[in-house]
Structures are given as C-alpha cells and as structure tokens.
Length: 193
Image 1: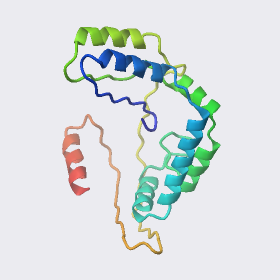
Image 2: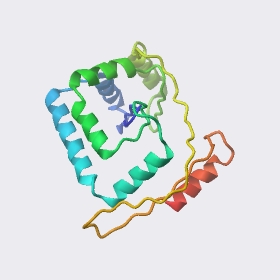
Image 3: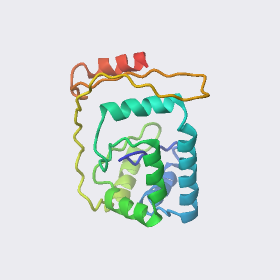
C-alpha cells in the first residue's frame, strides 16, 4: 500500500486459497521488518527520487500537487519536495517503522473483497478467525479533505538537457464521491488525461 493504506492483492486457485490467506495473515500480523531489506528498500527509493529530480513530468506533477493541496508539513497528505522526501526516507529507522505499524495497522477499519471460485463460508470463517484480535492501538479517524483556494499562476521549471516538456493544469472545487456528478467528473478527468 501507499500513504495511509495497507493493501494485499492475492491471486490463487481455490484449493490453495486457505494457505495463501494464512501466509498473508502471517505477513500482516507479524512482519519481519528485516534491517538489511529495509536498508535496501530505502536506498532504492532514494535512488528513484534522485533519478526523477530532473524529469519534467515528475517536477510538473509535483508542482501542481503542491499548488492545489497545500496541507501543512506533518499532515500525512502533505506533498513534500523531492529533497524533503529523500530526507524523510533517510531519517526512517526500523524501530520507528515497527512502532508506526503497531500503532496504526490493524483490521478494525477496512474492507475485504474476494472474487472468483472459492468457498464463501470457509473463507469468511478463516478471515474472521485471522482478523478477530488484530486491532490498531490508535483509533481510526477518517481524514477530512480540505479545499485550498488556488490563485491562477504560471510556473516554469527549467530542466536543462531534457528534450521533452510537460504541461499540467489543475484546480479545486467542492465534490465528493456522494455527488451525483462524481462519476461524470471521474470520466472527464480520465479523458483529459
């Protein structure tokens, strides 16, 4: 998952699904957080950010995100600069990640969808048993989105040596997935790219 989400996607045959669910349960409730793997992951993430730091597409998208969703630093929805993101990654430690996982990950507020050829009664019973005592320490509180006023502006980001260019535009307006026009706006957003 990313951000405040933990997601698990599983593909399995009917006969192997119980064993795969048991493995997912083990990984979710007793993650290893191996320090060597952790260091490798952090190094890979920093390398990716460094590689993106001169890419017009990355810089344009980051610029528009920072302009239209100006959550304060410390808010999980804050959009940092690439340098801030690299510094945050470098500051992470395995004990800190373990503590955050213990505090915020659990089955108290989530959704499960199982699709395909499976025994619904058996899968439901297995999931109930697996997730029964797995609770977060911190109470679940949904994040309420805020709208920020956006002033029209033009920003040029110079990326010397790059042949391609990128144009991004954005605005904000009050709409939720409960609005009658939400599906139409999702489609329009997709069609416009």
